[in-house]
Length: 354
Image (tube, rainbow, N blue to C red; front, side, top):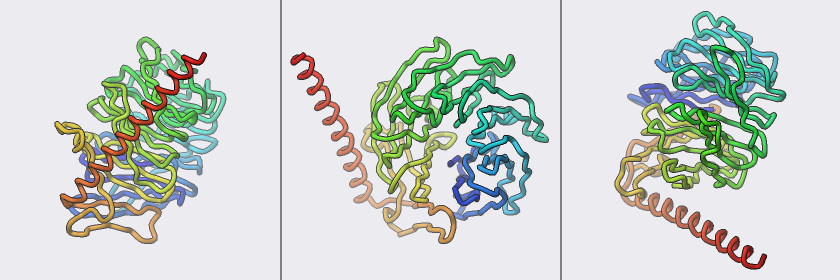
């Protein structure tokens, strides 16, 4: 799990080694290792102000950390099984947690007081999120449903059951009008929560989709999959924009920064990668510049030996490698288009034969 602080100065990552890492990105690169959980850290999130980090663990607890050198934290036993998801409300006053005990729980951030539990799921709950206005909660479960809850009445107002597999991740669009869900059936689905209807259905990955994140503009969605790729979807045009290759093995999590100029991804290869976006570029070829090992002119490459994660960040790009990166992205885009054309041809041939 990865998340950026409000000012982009810090990045948090959670790992199977029971540690939470806070990466200070400015003014210079530093890493802080936070020890406290007794088992794998499944989820991390900064509070809206950036003054707290919440983490959920396989040890059934949630910890609230102050992201400073001291690394102080308060801990509370949130569930009777693994905590899969933590999320702050946009006002920073509430916290919603989801667990393998099949429940979603809501807490006050101040003093971690338990408020209520939502318990209609009949299998593990992988993810829970507040809507931007804080009035709704969405949850995704291994019972193959995505449920929409009214926070005030605490009632389930709708169940989306159209997924062919388990739902790993769900999130609200910045406008609060729709949700996106990532599934083990390799798909990403976007639903309108006002009309409760399916808006978009993306079949762009060749394996389980683990995570997704909306760009703050609401125009793009980034996804992470077991097929080792990240994909950028253009929601306005309803199409795949880019396929990004960086991780060796499954890409397990992805998150845009709060203003959308960066996104971070984590993988089973124990690496956290930070990518730079430029969605306002006139030429889509300049949209994405990946910040990776060996692409900087000054050779700056930060590797933290002995920590759970290797983070790759570079301060500058050489023109040649930037061009290569753009060409690679265009090539991938062409490959995707070609594959789409061939699939359409096959469908036409099959239709004619039948």
